Image (tube, rainbow, N blue to C red; front, side):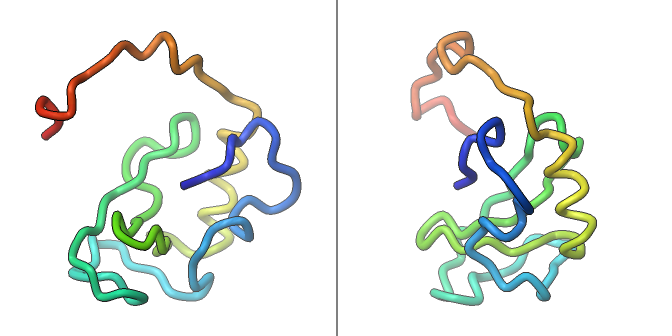
Length: 97
Protein backbone atom coordinates (compact mmCIF):
# COMPACT_ATOMS: atom_id res chain seq x y z
CA UNK A 1 0.00 0.00 0.00
CA UNK A 2 2.56 2.57 1.07
CA UNK A 3 5.77 3.12 -0.81
CA UNK A 4 8.92 2.46 1.16
CA UNK A 5 8.97 5.35 3.65
CA UNK A 6 12.75 5.54 3.44
CA UNK A 7 12.71 6.98 -0.06
CA UNK A 8 9.54 9.11 -0.03
CA UNK A 9 9.98 12.86 -0.33
CA UNK A 10 7.44 15.52 0.55
CA UNK A 11 4.10 14.93 2.21
CA UNK A 12 3.44 11.23 2.62
CA UNK A 13 -0.35 11.61 2.93
CA UNK A 14 -0.44 12.99 -0.61
CA UNK A 15 0.90 9.66 -1.90
CA UNK A 16 -2.12 7.74 -0.56
CA UNK A 17 -5.08 6.86 -2.78
CA UNK A 18 -7.76 8.46 -0.61
CA UNK A 19 -10.08 11.38 0.01
CA UNK A 20 -7.85 13.53 2.22
CA UNK A 21 -10.81 15.18 3.95
CA UNK A 22 -12.78 12.06 4.98
CA UNK A 23 -11.83 10.31 8.21
CA UNK A 24 -13.22 7.37 10.16
CA UNK A 25 -12.10 6.70 13.74
CA UNK A 26 -13.79 3.27 13.67
CA UNK A 27 -13.38 0.61 10.97
CA UNK A 28 -15.74 1.53 8.12
CA UNK A 29 -18.42 -1.04 7.25
CA UNK A 30 -17.53 -0.86 3.57
CA UNK A 31 -15.27 0.91 1.10
CA UNK A 32 -16.51 4.30 -0.04
CA UNK A 33 -15.08 3.62 -3.50
CA UNK A 34 -16.01 0.01 -4.38
CA UNK A 35 -18.42 -0.85 -1.51
CA UNK A 36 -16.39 -3.94 -0.51
CA UNK A 37 -16.69 -5.03 3.12
CA UNK A 38 -13.03 -6.15 3.13
CA UNK A 39 -11.59 -3.24 5.14
CA UNK A 40 -8.34 -3.80 7.02
CA UNK A 41 -6.51 -1.70 9.58
CA UNK A 42 -3.01 -0.61 8.61
CA UNK A 43 -0.34 -0.02 11.23
CA UNK A 44 2.83 1.90 10.40
CA UNK A 45 5.72 0.80 12.58
CA UNK A 46 7.46 3.75 14.14
CA UNK A 47 4.61 6.10 13.29
CA UNK A 48 1.68 5.20 15.52
CA UNK A 49 1.05 2.36 17.96
CA UNK A 50 -2.18 0.98 16.53
CA UNK A 51 -4.23 1.33 13.37
CA UNK A 52 -3.26 4.53 11.53
CA UNK A 53 -5.17 3.99 8.28
CA UNK A 54 -7.99 1.85 6.91
CA UNK A 55 -7.52 0.19 3.54
CA UNK A 56 -9.88 -1.68 1.22
CA UNK A 57 -8.33 -5.09 0.65
CA UNK A 58 -10.06 -5.25 -2.74
CA UNK A 59 -9.34 -1.90 -4.45
CA UNK A 60 -6.64 -0.54 -2.06
CA UNK A 61 -8.54 2.71 -1.45
CA UNK A 62 -7.33 4.28 1.82
CA UNK A 63 -9.51 5.90 4.45
CA UNK A 64 -7.78 8.14 6.98
CA UNK A 65 -8.40 7.41 10.65
CA UNK A 66 -7.23 10.85 11.75
CA UNK A 67 -7.23 14.28 10.11
CA UNK A 68 -4.78 14.75 7.24
CA UNK A 69 -2.37 16.84 9.32
CA UNK A 70 -2.33 14.33 12.18
CA UNK A 71 -1.82 11.39 9.81
CA UNK A 72 1.05 13.25 8.14
CA UNK A 73 2.68 13.86 11.54
CA UNK A 74 2.57 10.13 12.36
CA UNK A 75 3.82 9.11 8.90
CA UNK A 76 6.74 11.53 9.19
CA UNK A 77 7.74 9.87 12.50
CA UNK A 78 8.26 6.62 10.58
CA UNK A 79 10.13 8.24 7.71
CA UNK A 80 13.65 6.98 7.52
CA UNK A 81 12.91 3.80 9.45
CA UNK A 82 13.21 0.47 7.72
CA UNK A 83 13.11 -3.23 8.39
CA UNK A 84 14.69 -6.15 6.63
CA UNK A 85 11.88 -8.40 5.30
CA UNK A 86 14.27 -11.36 5.42
CA UNK A 87 14.34 -11.04 9.23
CA UNK A 88 10.55 -11.41 9.49
CA UNK A 89 10.43 -15.18 8.99
CA UNK A 90 7.71 -16.98 7.08
CA UNK A 91 4.16 -17.47 8.36
CA UNK A 92 1.92 -19.66 6.18
CA UNK A 93 -1.27 -17.91 5.05
CA UNK A 94 -3.29 -20.62 6.81
CA UNK A 95 -1.98 -19.32 10.15
CA UNK A 96 -3.11 -15.71 9.59
CA UNK A 97 -5.96 -14.62 11.86
